[in-house]
Length: 539
Image 1: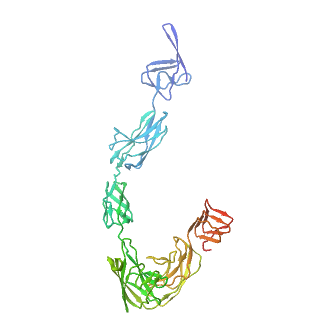
Image 2: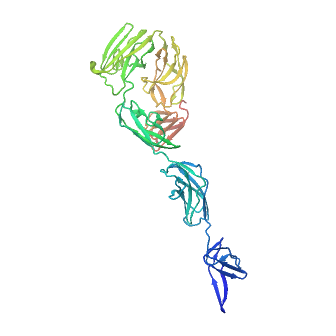
Image 3: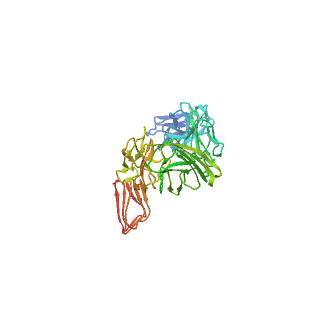
């Protein structure tokens, strides 16, 4: 820093005064004392509080006994949007000039709803000396208003900006609350309730939805139990709340007893589920009807079965499952050749053997008609024996006799044990005429060696014989963990195979997958012949 030497002559004495540590003026200085200074052609006179910019003879700008005037400033930028919900985040841009203090912190503050900063609320902060953006959070308890303003202040030096230029609107977010009047028992009415807003949107188990503030669910079942969520809205702001519905007890059964139409024999062959009003094609072999209780709350100790039709008035009491109309010995079903005409089956269930313990089911009446054109559907033929989940297969079949208008032939796939006894058989293809049907094996098939395929008609109801031999279907993926010690072994999957097993001599093993073969820790070949192939499952 430049040193200024001044020469004063007073009362015959010569004093040389050396003003050290004179302050540089950058850009201006506020004087703290009055007086004057002369150096050559430069003379400075000053008053207390007066601002000076003084050039000295040595090309320095200086003045003694003063301090630099503060020029720091902060301004708040445009805040967009100008409407917010309480609890929301908000971006506050600002510009800072000459904020140079070490450890400075910028703080964004919110006024009250009238724009006053008597008791400002902190929104957020930023440690910096530069212009920037403060991300703040509007407190959830901020009341609704349209006159809010925001300012920014610094800590080093202490500077406070003017508020932002335009008023901001803040709407208070609803305080959502949800409840129910449970716990409930099966069959009761679930009552939900929510408060806190002017509109409501519910969602919950079993695809439940409602826009009512207090919706209800009649005749509750176990599927209605669980977490319900409501979105509460007001003035464009929303919040969610949840309530847990507890339902005790067992569901009332939608189905109590299933009926099946079967081909008699040892073992029997289930043809299709029997339902009221069905029209069935006459067949050349004996048939029987079986009853299967499917409700775990239904107690059945015995059935009384009465069947009436052309030249038939049959009555039997069955005490042992499977319950059949024309009797059975285990899986050996006896039967009759039913003639064309209308039939009525009446079934009554009791709690104990031989109609004892009181009636627990029925009487339920099932009516069906046998038509006498003696149509037939052949056992199907397949285009390939290599079946895989997700792949296609052509199924061909022939028919004799006639079928009713609108008839559809459905190609059905059994379960992995060859069983077709299901309320909804797996349909892999359909056609309106006999011949070749292009079918697809579902990706969900788990794989196995006991599958069968058959063709069934819808008008009249008739099922053909299934494929003569069980079918092997390879799954989408396999996880092989069992060690293989001998023989020739081929494992296929249409997707991927994962192996963590050991292959021991003298086994010969091939893994064949359509997409990937993954050998995980634990996999090991110990003298065995092993081959991994990426190729189509049907190859």
